[in-house]
Image (cartoon, rainbow, N blue to C red; front, side, top):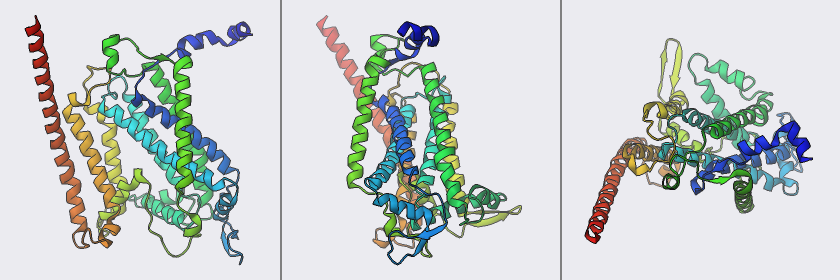
Length: 433
């Protein structure tokens, strides 16, 4: 049988070329695999949820109201899913797995950046990774809009407002992307189509391209491999050793997410209720909180006309600023043109400027994320209403700058300790001779 299959499918070639591929052994290399496993679990749980979800805004009887009030069918189907055995648990797993995928993906990109693994010839995979982060965030936003409770309705209203804020073409984009003026009868089916077909298709295509390029270009090697076998691939074979490790990791982190989901609920749709006249306080998940923070501290009066186009705070806070940030991340391989390392992960402390810029960037994101809680900070008297915006804007500039110089100073201190240790070792070796 094996010979029969090999004559037709050339399985032996597949084994020699791919299944025996060497994978580096280092804990940081599992971040990308966790991201991939999260996507697989999201697809599986999403398929199960789709079997009971009704993507419609048509009014039906509220299954939670004995008086028979009318609610959108999408909201009613979420109530029915929650009432099913393990239905609410399935929603929780789907939600928290999405957060894990974003978190693991971001940490994976951090490893790539701080170890210089974006350099030639891996620039294309760096760009694909960034696109995966962007489209994962978009998929998540469309996902937590689908329950169409008051929270989701308010979120969609904000998203439509951001799309419509683009000068000259915003109104047309908002209506074209979201099936007419908000809220239209085709809004939920349109968002549902994005969530289960368009965006997952893009994610799968990008993931496939990412993995093919990684196989073609091979992993960067951990630093210890340089001493073991210079410019050779050091690792364990895929099919016999790496695969069991990956399966154990997948089962372990999936079990942890299920355990976490058993105790930590997602936002309760039954508490928010169906879409209404009141707008609850809406905050995105952690990976988009910084954009929300920028919008929170930009003055609402920021608006001007230019050549017939309206430029307002929504446009600058939710489109221009994130666009600039993402654009700078895309430009990283073009800015850092050094190509001395194509094999081994670099020690971050050997490149203090890159390290300092990266940590300062995350400090800026952290400050903007804190700004997302501006109303709560004012309400609790941590900040005063009159100067809250000023303090947060100054912090977003000063704290990253201080972080940059602090990291440079710390790295210089580490270098001095290293040089001192090396001199002492050389002196001790000379004395022994």
